[in-house]
Image 1 (cartoon, one colour):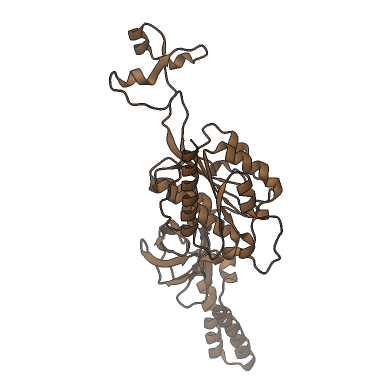
Image 2 (tube, one colour):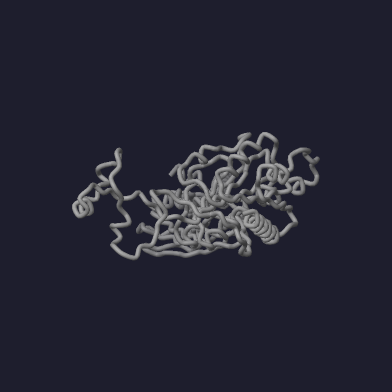
Amino acid sequence: MREALASLTTRGRAFLAAGITTVVAAIVVGHSSVVRIGVLVAVLPLLTAWWVGRARYRLALVRTVSPQLVVAGQPSTVELSVFNESRTPTGVLLLEERLPYVLGTRPRFVLEGLGHGWRRHATYQVRSELRGQFDIGPMSVRVTDPFGLVELGRTFHATSRLTVTPRTISLPSIPLGGAWTGSGDNRPRAFATGSAEDVTVREYRRGDDLRRVHWRSSARLGELMVRREEQPWQSRATVFLDNRGTSHRGQGAASSLEGAVSAAASIAVHLAHHGYTVRLVTASGDSRETQWHSQTAEASTVPLLEALAIVQLDHSPAPDTQWLAEPGHGGLTIGVFGSLADTDLPFLRRLQHHASSSLAIALDVDAWAPHLPVQPGRGAATHLTSSGWRSVTLGPRDRLDTAWQELGMMASRATASAGAAR
């Protein structure tokens, strides 16, 4: 009852005040008939508050976001279904969804009263020009009586998540090379005779785990044979994204970081669709982003784009290098760099040393913030070239596909020069 009285609307309080005033005035003047009218006007909001306060509303909400993974700028549809699970019919329902500001204004709906077992549906669209992960909800519901005198508020605590990935650009095919890596006893080979067991087992060596002994082959050959720890050689590629705060300039969607994220996403999707097993590494070396994604092209791009959707500026002065010590590292390495300093040269050389082929996109970060003074001595292209990288410069008005094609021409010339030297 206290909650209901506190939830009186402006109309309900006006009725209560008008009724009390009428009763007092009628008593002073001596009009008994007017007193009854004043009592009726004053009691109406009180009775309504008592009835609403005793009502046991049990509402259920089902929210469906489709699709839950969208590219920046594309809409997603949110479907709402409200159920009345109680036996008490509701009044008019006022629904308001809480949204992050980047998804637009908060949608509001007015639904008619719900009887027992009834349901109502509502839909709306959300759209974000910025990448990220956003929680939709919770939903707040206000129940009003038919006279509009009382308004009770309820909140559904469940939320739904929407992931907005960065925009990607279709890139042309270019010769990359130097991307075959793997681990195990040897590279898989074709065999013309024998069975698969003859290829996947080898002689026992001191120190081998006895659990790896293949007893059937050992009995047939008369000596201990163990299973090989052989993994298929793959066309692997590492996409390194330099997301340090000291490497980028600008803010929001027009910052150099967003340009770097879009370039890294386009390159990762391009490599995945061309048969590469891709992993994404940032300056923080987060383990979630350093996993190899070896599913189909469509499935492998999902975790890559989800990881890029939540990339933020890293405030560490130097990139993390622990992931370089992981086994199986190698193959093609493509870096997307902002501005670089002399202190970054050891990292660039180490990263280039671990890769069989190293290519880079160097962002002209000063062009992303022309209103700020140019920082001297921080050109990325110069530092990358001195560390053995093949790189191209990308500005805010340059086309990524053109820069990518230029990078492929540089790789072709380097391959031709290496062949001529042999």
